[in-house]
View (spheres, rainbow, N blue to C red):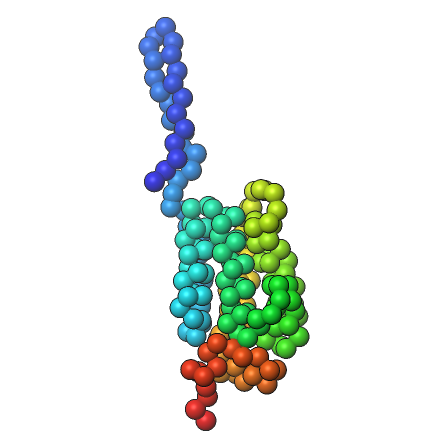
Length: 170
């Protein structure tokens, strides 16, 4: 599907229509790999954000990245309070690094909040790409070695949704 602008030109020598391609869909957005233990619903939401971004709907894709982050933290046992608190608690527990928590706030949460709660503004591809990259990295932090992360989370008093199903057999 493409988006074409047309101009009709008339003159004493006849008329003609000229066309200029403004956009062409589908565009391409890199699809990032996700760890094996990312729950299906989180992976689906992340992939939907990539699909939405592929048609340059950066605002909607950024909101989906924020939603994915919040759901991943809740799935990991961070359930009380606003997303800012969940990010801070995950960093405090060591589930994500302090540096990653800064990116979670700046590149994912704040951008998603801008989309969801503030007046409309254009979101750039670059803003989305940062959100996309750091959401993927946080999913890696939480799910790449899920058994180790589950041990950490339970030692901190968290109750991850998958604690029983992925319990270490040893």
